Amino acid sequence: MNLTLRKANKSDSRFLFELRNEEEVRCVSRNTAPIAFSDHKKWFEKKLASSVSLILIAEENGTPIAQTRFDAKGQYAEVSVAVVSAFRGKGYGTKIIADATKLFFKKYTKVFAVRAYANLGNAASVKSFSRAGYRHLGEVDDEGTTRHLLVFERLN
Ligand SMILES: CC(C)(COP(=O)(O)OP(=O)(O)OC[C@H]1O[C@@H](n2cnc3c(N)ncnc32)[C@H](O)[C@@H]1OP(=O)(O)O)[C@@H](O)C(=O)NCCC(=O)NCCS
Image (cartoon, rainbow, N blue to C red; front, side, top):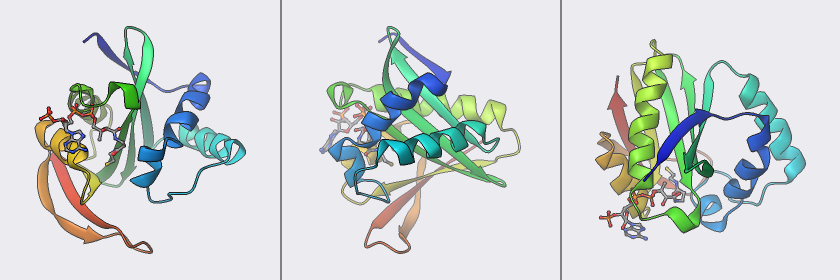
């Protein structure tokens, strides 16, 4: 494993768009419908300009293989992660979540906890957040959807 993390920039737009539209990623997302590139472009520009969002790109030997995003709201932040399908189940998700969370806490010192919301049946997500130092907090219903989510939290 030769993994590095860096902040996303404009040139990552296509990579993030394709990853977001992968079927397994859509299935676990709030909005499960495919996203149009024009909508993604607008959304990504806003995120890049936002001081409360941090998107990190994970690279293996210089090639992007995953993304993780933190959205801060006051003292809390929400994290999401997606690994390119060919690289799943090899330990990358766990390592990326652990490293990215540390990096996020270093930059966002006012945030005291990061929370992750995993679909009930998403074993890979549950395993990787648990191994990356997150503890299971409880369960919630996702407002406006039929999803039942497990909540994980890691403190700063
Ligand atoms: C969730 C995700 C980020 C995890 O990354 P990853 O690189 O696959 O994670 P890891 O390899 O570190 O660990 C995954 C663990 O789950 C296991 N796993 C993977 N798929 C599984 C499945 N369908 N059922 C049961 N276990 C599964 C792996 O075998 C591994 O456990 P092991 O080491 O005991 O064998 C990745 O699978 C992904 O991008 N999924 C699609 C998007 C997503 O679900 N994001 C999370 C939203 S909160």
